[in-house]
Image (cartoon, rainbow, N blue to C red; front, side):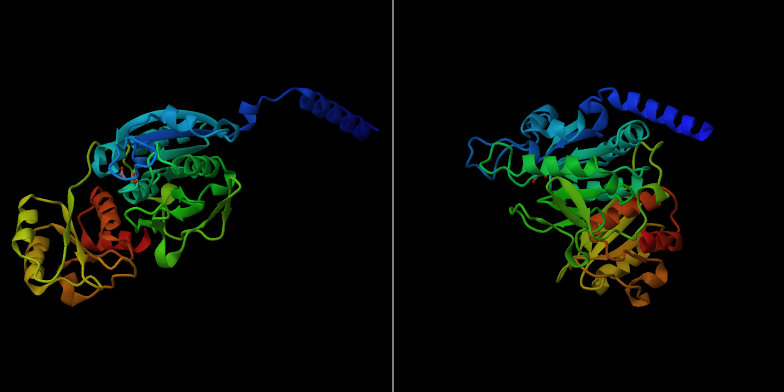
Length: 354
Ligand code: ASP
């Protein structure tokens, strides 16, 4: 009898609660858009102008206004972090972004969308993948056609990015780059074409899933350490160590290496040939630099595949290999690694897990 009464009482409470109207905003995920500029916010002189336009012209509010019904998918807030072409992206903006995202995600915000130029989007995405301290989704998004263009790709990309950022299903999977209905992991994705909207590819390792009818559908995840599991903490940093990239090619000169070393970098990533090979003349100068404490990391200009350890390529004097990270992403990880240590063995451990 007592039990029946208790059941009745609970049914009554639930019925009363259910009868209260719940506003749409309460049921929607809270997504904050952090705008940084790029072609997605670019404007040209006419609808047919597809190159030579001005990136980073429209504000976050204007981007939102261009997407019909965006506010039906999430309770949107927006902040303008920068308004630049991403060729001018800087470590200063990266630190600002990472700190702001960490602050927002430790509160009520359910997900973040970073609008960004496509040129360096993969570098920012990977930096955030290593420095965001939350399981909640962080999505970078851009466009290849300016906002003023016929068939501009920005509005649909933004809608899809917001739907991934607001999804519980997207939690714990690292930072994403979402464009053209494809969800790419920050570690693998790279820009592969100068003009085409489908420029972003995760190459051999594949993208993680689709956005179908504004819902993410995942097929795989990255097994490399990211976000909450990352050991890198930028909360007290105001600058990052200096790391340059040295490109290699037939007859590459020695002076270019010496000039880089003269700027006192903390590290150099070599965009080596094939499996991280370096011309013998340059190798000799880089070995001297390693012995003076500059960390040399061997990557590859090929675009896919691992760079493997080889004592004949400088690893005998402490060069590190960058796994399958392309040179620009190896630079991101090396900068963060150097905030912790200058020990090549310890830095190699990091390249093996991130
Ligand atoms: N130049 C542009 C940028 O990276 C290219 C783009 O956004 O697609 O800002």
